[in-house]
Image (cartoon, rainbow, N blue to C red; front, top):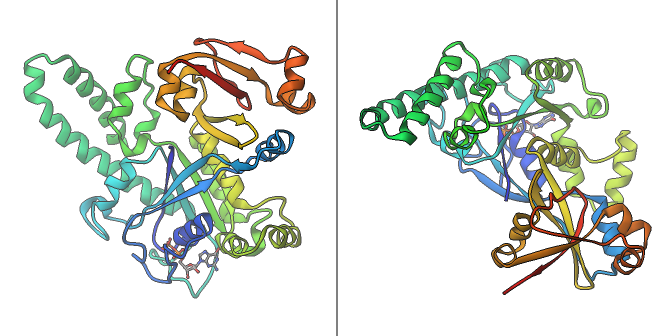
Length: 364
Ligand code: GDP
């Protein structure tokens, strides 16, 4: 599955957000730094109205959404790369995630201590980015030192690694994140394997006060401007509202959202933004037993898409009976699509499209 790491300075609302996302009391929110010491991991259903529609048409007994993992990563403070706060523990946690949701405090509240003594989300973002850059620099220096012997032996892999590390180092030494390095298709895999922290895609999550949840505020506008410069994505959310909503049932939640002037829960926007950030897409399987959504990367071929369900589906892949979502809905399901010639038989080279309803045929 795909993993998003929630990072940010202490007291910006990470745990509140994580709690709302996972509806557990596991990550206890508290008004002091370092409350969440262990990384908390939670699975979140990816909201998708299409799935319910498909289940209705297919008269499926069960509806199973696709999932995304969120990890609440605490301990990022100024000096973290030098062992301040929770030290380097957080680095290992960040290395493991596919993307970063960076929570920024965009709410004023005299009762909630700000570690830096002022509310300035753009400066906060820089504090964290600096720590990540310093951590990358340190690990690059160590790794390059470790490659010296292999380089002398002209080890091919080591040569590529060292070249890429040197490129990242040059950019970082200029005070810029490694994600701005342009990497050729050939190097893409080796580059990703370096697992540098500042190459992870970033989504800025502006945690605003309750009154600003619909429109944002001056703080979130400043973040949006910064994000636009970096080509990063932004979501405006009120973690407190989301936490309240997460304790309501669906009808109550809908009423509450309407009262607040919100079209949908911020968490739904957040999860989808994460999905987009990772260039993910969804395909569906629909039957009387269950209607289910599956996550794949954009650009995935049919056999690999089948492999998400089971390795045997990929190994023994023969073909995928394919119906586009719109056709499935318009023609009243599989039989209708079949009768209208809208069910296609696709082979190994088929690029799965977002919303495809698939049925795989495979050899055991
Ligand atoms: P973390 O250290 O980043 O995980 O922050 P927490 O989620 O523990 O939140 C720190 C404190 O800020 C808690 O007392 C929360 O109730 C409070 N808090 C979180 N989000 C908001 C918000 O949107 N508005 C206000 N006023 N307080 C918030």
